[in-house]
Length: 265
Ligand code: 23J
Ligand code: MN
Image 1 (cartoon, protein in one colour):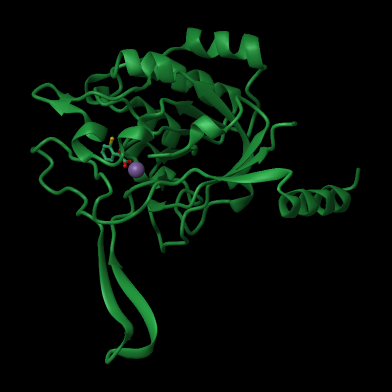
Image 2: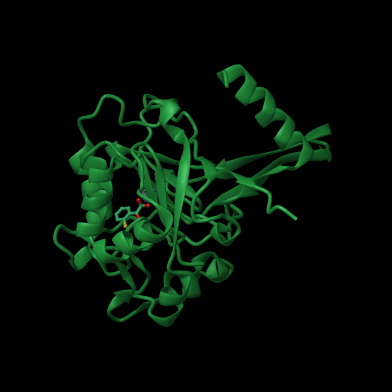
């Protein structure tokens, strides 16, 4: 099939609903959970603010619009390589310089939601990925890999979402070895349904924050606070995860969209 024929079929399939567009973003607003770092790092990202400019009133009789106060790493968002010191030197490692061809790719959905429900500190290991590949096939170069934890069910409540106690946050994530394994597979990026790409306890790992450290060191991308992964098949969907073209940006909120084959009736 020619690429023109594929796209023509794709267009028809999207219009007919034969391919469904699944919204993998959470709602972005003042209620959106925001990362809290330990107090030694004094400044956190501020909460999202939405300020009304006008809504069919004296300030704008026929139009409604808002202005935003927004950190790059807010809500469902993208981590660009320059976000981490290990990825600082890639000319194409910023939101405005990255290669957009890489952003649209098949997505592998690793469902460990039951394990994460049983243990909020669940760590995805190489063994888990190898077992998943034995059932679903080998993860390919250029593809997205996301951990399905169903953590988005907690996103309505920041305390529940961050799940922190005196020993810090308790949320699932990958081991350093698992991320190294996926980088070796050639993935374009790794996504989580939690506040960041790393586990809550990842500050104490070697290296600290291994998903951030290793992904960005190898010019790969991160996705955080993804939603609705329970609506995606393990393989066979396409994920579109595009950051705003922020000048020299290190990340951006995204509207993450998955193209999913409709279940055959
Ligand atoms: C800075 C430091 C640690 C972390 C993060 C940012 C994120 O999760 C992020 O949004 O990239 S863990
Ligand atoms: Mn981030």
